Length: 86
Image (cartoon, rainbow, N blue to C red; front, side, top):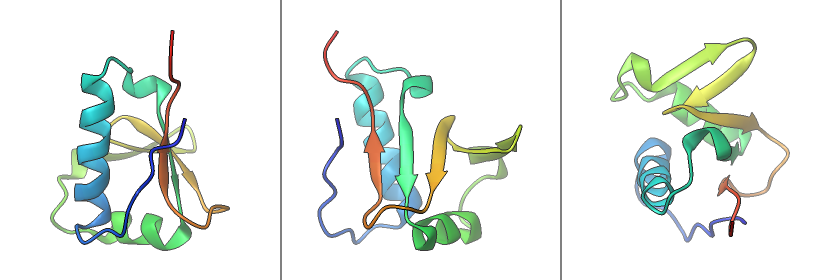
């Protein structure tokens, strides 16, 4: 399922931190989530100087934000995807 993101006023980092926290509180593990970000949002996230260095990682060729895998580009709007139901 995709979370719908209305027009954002917060930074990419703040917006998706909130979304990740909500989904995790609903019982979905961060390893089961994927952030599909526009190239512009990826750029903003990488350049956000207010983020602690530990919030973004690049391991094994995979970018992660707060432990959630980031897919870069190929979408018209950034979304947080995660499984629904059990």
